[in-house]
Length: 340
Image (cartoon, rainbow, N blue to C red; front, side):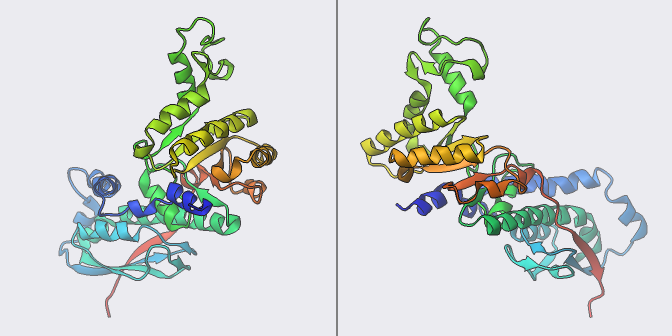
């Protein structure tokens, strides 16, 4: 399997995020149906109830107030239909929009249009904001893949928006793929602490631990254990914090892959590596013949302001928490209109 195929297999999982998926609908319900219930409380929308009496059928447009990439349309249609609001899609997920473009046309009772207004705009606005930011970075970084992390406010709704913007989702949850991080390695070293010499740690901090498990290298032990569960995982990834550990991880990955002749995306994540250290590590991996067998990703402190330094240095992907914890909401309005 080619490198880009392994990369897509590991990180492009947006096709799993849609309204035909039970877990996704549960999440969508939390941020839409449940949000409306919280908004109207026990007594309802007292402004609308005080001002309007007839609750007639009305028409409304959702209009863009800026340029960008639209996301959340599939989710919005599902949401509005729950309130018997008919939706005509003018824009679809992934479409470009400019200011004053109509995104959706709505038809429903005025009480329903008004009580769902803010939640609907929040849904499309957040997802479109993430998709727009992602799209800008994807264009800038191609062919380097820009992927999300699990630093999300809206869980996989955020990751769906990243996917719509052309980015990678990374893993969709703890259940889906194996990602061995610093705390896993530290906890594993503690399992072997019964050995009074070889398993000894100098303190309780992860930074000062001797990375052994009963004398064996903890990185090797972790990868061997993970490999036994590979059938359950879309990919296996390990986070490393320095160049020697990156080389060590590759040295353990290769024989595991060769022994079972398995095609499985195997990834080394360079955590908080400087661009120079990334270059040095990739050079060493190439020299040792490991680079063509594994995927390499950088993560930690990467933002739109410094991402240029990570381009064209041999990385397959960069992951940015920024995509989902710092996007600006896409500016939208909902206006009730007179139907001609």
